[in-house]
Length: 198
Image 1 (cartoon, rainbow, N blue to C red):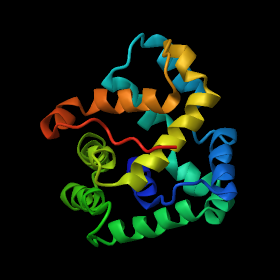
Image 2: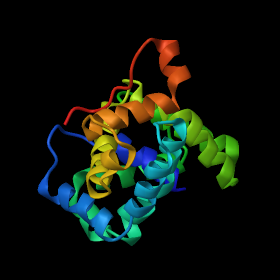
Image 3: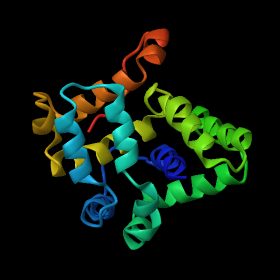
Image 4: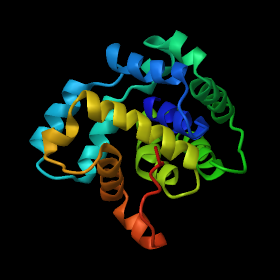
């Protein structure tokens, strides 16, 4: 369920700039523990290089259910990015397909839910190891931009670059993490991850 929310949140994100209300949402996510920065910092320190496991650790540490509802509901409601995500979630849960930008990602998520039925582990596995690639493949720039912003918030708050001795910027590290997770898929299409520009 958390991964479903992650994919839908990022798919619904829009716009180049981040409004004040959305910045407040990201701050809330850190302050209310929706992003578990202590866990991430520890995992980054234990892992001396960037591997696909770091991506999985990020998926574990970022609770979009908390961001959207239980921890930051008011901030989410004030942020258009978050409200769009809730509407997108409704479409996916009702089994509706979509076209246009992010259609591949949303349709993949819808198919995961339909195939897995009520077995949440199967849904999570399908979303994490199948659909999430579409967020970064260049077919859903709204997704990659918002996800990058969430990662940057975690990166700065947890001082993740220092934890793993990474010399570049947070968004560059995120690009490296995403590539490590989906290397086979990116190599197959001859591209690097389309990580959103800040």
